[in-house]
Image 1: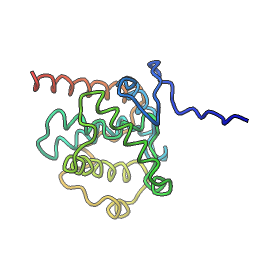
Image 2: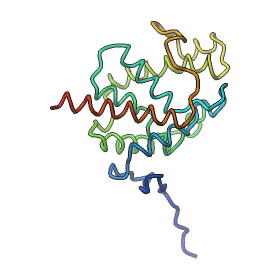
Image 3: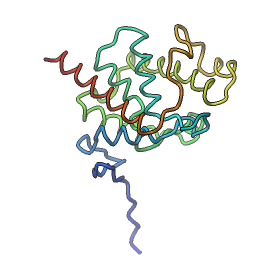
Image 4: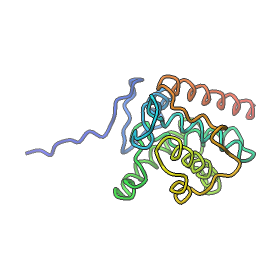
Length: 202
């Protein structure tokens, strides 16, 4: 009996067919990324609010925090906005489950990250310094998401994410948005950064 062929690609809303094991930048579309991230829930959907808190909204908040933490170029901001972009295909796996799954998840995630970045003229991966800066912004967002939306106590969040400095709940738009609104805002911010990059390069 012939071995069953395992499908390793996903059909996108745009019509693109993305190979998860060998993703091509040519099959990456920002419309698919925005659509997918706006419909992927943070915290496995275990958040308060009328809508799930989406990865698209999280990404917007992280990019905003990233800019406010220090001087950043449009390219760096775009990489911050896209820091979770592979999740439009593989979903938002919570950290405890990533630890159980192990390295296979990371391999797929890294390949997708490279394809996405190259599609938009970005370095395949952020260097260590930029990755650390984005992670810092991500951790600030996670603290407020945890305490405002996911039912964590402040003490629990402090142990896991540290104490954010220079930010308060009032300065971050934590109310979960409808998917179409999160999608629209994500696309708007992406294209604004594209325009800024073009202006810098011209």
